[in-house]
Amino acid sequence: MSENVQSPGVYVFPADSGSRPIEGVGTAVAAFVGFASMGPSEPTLVTSWTQYTKVFGSSFAGGLLAHAVYGFFLNGGSACYVVRIGGDGAAPTPVPQAMLGSFRIVAKELPEGEGSAISVSVTEAPVPEGEEPSDERFTITVKRGGEVKETFEFPPKSGKGSLATVVRQSKLIKVEETGAELATLEPKTVTLTTPAAPPVLPAKMTPDVYIGSEDERSGVKGLAAIDEVTMIAMPDLMGAFERGAIDADGVKSVQNELNAHCAEMKDRMAILDAPPGLSAQGMLEWHTTLNLDSMWATLYHPWIKVFDPETKGTRRIPPSGHIAGIWARSDATRGVHKAPANEVIQGAIALESQLTRKEQDLINPHGINCIRVMPGRGIRVWGARTLATTDTQWRYLNIRRLFNYLQESIINGTQWVVFEPNDDALWARIRRTIAAFLVMEWRRGALFGLTPDEAFYVKCDRDTNPAESIEQGKVVCEIGVAPVKPAEFVIFHLAQMASGVSLVSE
Image 1 (cartoon, rainbow, N blue to C red):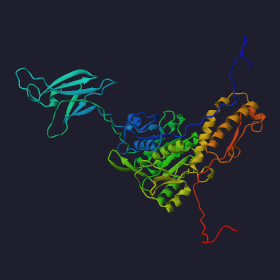
Image 2 (image 1 turned 120 degrees about the vertical axis):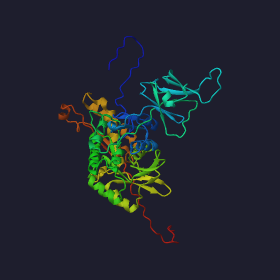
Image 3 (image 1 turned 180 degrees about the horizontal axis):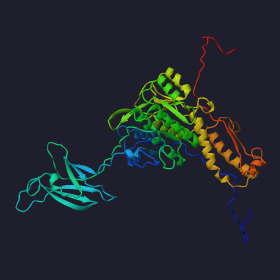
Image 4 (image 1 turned 180 degrees about the vertical axis):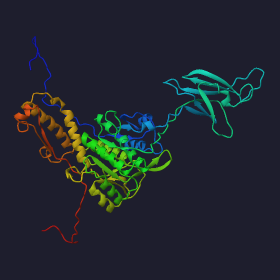
């Protein structure tokens, strides 16, 4: 490299180090598809429960999305995308209103834009000269955007007429009786606000509503444009099945499409829910009819019970949202290579059904991850398998997610290779870059082996890049890694020794 030097002196110029570090991608961004009381239908990033309620509203009767998102953040999740479905079936937005004593004050029209809020103030009316003071005379002032628009006196000078009659000529508000035996009015100022309206959940659902469209950024397919997503859950699918809005065949169709989406994207996993109320044998029969042998999907059983803010009691919900939060928590504390199991489910009060070890023995070989009550240790996830039953190398969830992480990190970190001169120098730089990244993962405990040579290899040379491959503009790099498998079965052999016998020979 020649530098333009014109006069004597000492010069420092930046030099290319020959390799560029690869940064690990995020692994804990969830996506949820379901019903919300308001909000956009395209994928929307949410980073806290408070933000979710501001954009999509809180929980409501019949909806499970809010419970799932709350469980995600409660269990350690930090970011998720929400896709609202069924927006066309939402109830009309109620007009702003407020209670003034025992009267309901309702806006006659929706305020437009910020700073146009309607407020109503009740103050004691001034006492006319020569009259006795009275605490039963009031002045009603109506403001819009902080500016006084209307003023009314109550009771009217005629002494006849209700509050509704007095403000009948108002262009901004109307008054409704609430059915109270005695209508009361006292000095107070209220601002009319719009209560969130829960959606009218459709009586019948078709798989297309959940599957959506990539072009319209709706449903599951709308998530194709969001590269950061690593896990997807659809809790309201089972909610619709529970209330009879979609049949079993429709549920299986949606879950198969969700699995196909994850398999096509190759960077995310599906967290599937099963129907409620299934026994271990019923769960096995559901798995059989689902007919899903996949490394891209997981299935958890049974449902959990959580606190319901609407009824102030408990309700059962599918566990997928809480499970997604546990994946995120495990990734943050231990790393994506650690199986997200033997973890407490925060927020779970009880389980819909208690599983015994024999029942888990029945369904665990089929990749169904159980949730069990461990006496003295809380409610824990007690399984970390995918639904891959024939391809056993992808049996474990953490192995599939580790490879997703490695693949995405290497792809993102080697974009600089494109259009570089395809020669030995480039191949050497690629080897150094990828090897340096894998060494860091080995030191973090993600790869098996006492030395880096045992943990991985990177081959990018004349053997992987023959002349015909170079002519086609290809650079081929072969990478092999030895992932750490989870200790799913811990076996101790205990032997009885003869008492009083010395083991030390003299």
